[in-house]
Length: 231
Image (cartoon, rainbow, N blue to C red; front, top):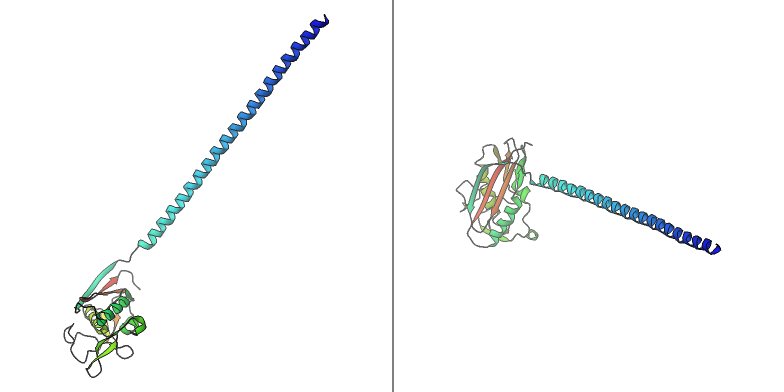
């Protein structure tokens, strides 16, 4: 009898152990699954957040780029009023290099409506430290001499011939050379000398104007355009 009781008690103990173990394993599995699900959800949430931030960043970059393009690509409409060219000798000389410096300085100069343009005031003093060299020019007596910036009178004379074609540009100062020059017709020249004689005109067109100037070894080219906006 005592032996049977011990046997039954042993069976109950074994059964209880298995039932408890199964319960613990089940809880552990549930906890593991819960942790796994939570981790997966967290990763999904983080991924979604990252994607949203990336989209915002891309949108911002696109907006900035569009704004940048919009600002710098807008150009003021232009209407050409007149142009004129004079011939050069076709050789690289101090005179042609002086002319190149001067046309580059003059290029894209804007003259507001009602403003008086000064050639010498715009170009400045033709000094050696600016790259100017000595080249042929006339002195007050008509003698050919070497001066810094020799050749600038061809640029001012070319500009003068453009101005003559535009009725609303009023010539305020202009001086002829003491002798005829080869690059324009008689009485169509405009000599300049910084600090003494100048070429000036007033803009009465009702709009801003822009001067485009360039040169190569063969020619000096100048044109004047009217800008659409009034000043």
